Amino acid sequence: MPFVEVEPWVWQEVDGQRRLAADHDGTAVTAIGLDPAFTVQPMPAHQAVLPTVLAASLSIILAWLLICLVTATHAWRHRIRRHRTRGARWLRAADVSSVVALAAAAVSWGVVATALLNDAPPPAAWVIRAAQVLTALAVLGVVPAAWSTVHSARRVVRTRDRRGWLDVALRMVLVAGFAGLGHGVLVGGLLAPSITC
Image (cartoon, rainbow, N blue to C red; front, side):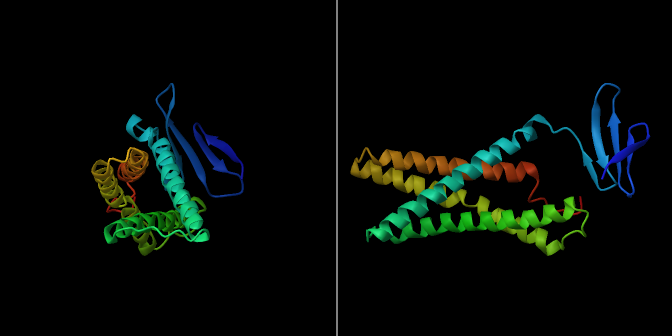
């Protein structure tokens, strides 16, 4: 719906109830408010990089998942059996579980965002809390990723297999992806105890 200016720096929705207002310091807009529910303000520099950090982190994690799917499919089609220790299997399962939690968290946050952006009733508190728990589980993926990196580096040193350093480097990139995700989640306030603001 279009808006018309009804007062200086205040706009009213045509044939609607919503209002849009802007605050300014005389030279630039410092905040934009939509109804009483939302206020948009410029982000500080440490938060302005969040979209880039999160996009890079998610790209790394999704690329890792794709590589896992391709290698697992290849091994299944060619009946290749990998002899992994119980610990290595546990670490792989923990990595995959973190990615599954990340996907579920993305769906949950999508439900929350859709409700908030479409003037729908706010989602139930348990939906937001579930999204937070799933997000925390996804961020904890940094632990098995780091542990498997250390385990892989020890194996390479022990066996003196120089080609194994590529695997270690890729695992370090995955650790960076999970660490970036954790940074974005914490700085972005997705795990904040209060869900009223």
